[in-house]
Length: 303
Image (cartoon, rainbow, N blue to C red; front, side, top):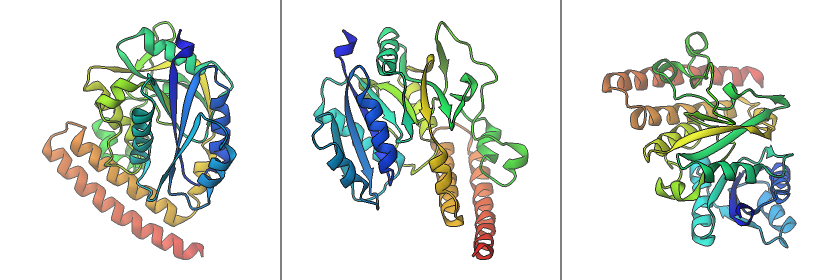
């Protein structure tokens, strides 16, 4: 019965023609019906045109063009809204990065079965092979950031006081093949469409970073849970993303996005007191100014 259920997958593309095509081909091999929606976030390399031409005869592949790159959350929301208005029978939506691929042709079916069999679960992810190395369960999910993480993560002093953005699980309790967790990675997960529509998708006020934490908070607010299936695997080739951050201007832009998103999360989702929020904002603003100066100096000397 579940194999006849229509799934949808939203892929956010930005100058990633080859990876997006590989991801689409991987999805087309799945043993379920998947409506694939590619949202192009104002690419500058004609990748959307190439993707449209490559899959023009495939009725399961749909493309949307954004004239402005509004970031991860807004881009994915465009795809989610497209699914909502065009595919009424979709019960499970996957948010998937272009650098994700699968060997298991039943992974959507398996994850869909988990969602169907457990009313408490709204979002489910899986283990992943990250840049060729198998991530353990502890590294395939995370806890919400602690005060220390929120204050120091991404800052210069954070190298000494807080190396991780989020709290990493030291151990995760697994019931059968399911582990209930705080947050799953945004690179690939399945979510019940009715829940995603209920919370109105991603919060559009971040450009990049903290989207998973915010989405998890919104899911908890409707009394649902997130989980990881330890029997399923995907491949995550993140090396492409790492290679894009090779110049100082790109690194500074990424850093600015992180600061802005972290401050937005602290003010709107962390439930911290006003004193903590004020000190965090002041400290992080100062840290960014210092980092900005350092990056400009390094940029001059690297020429």
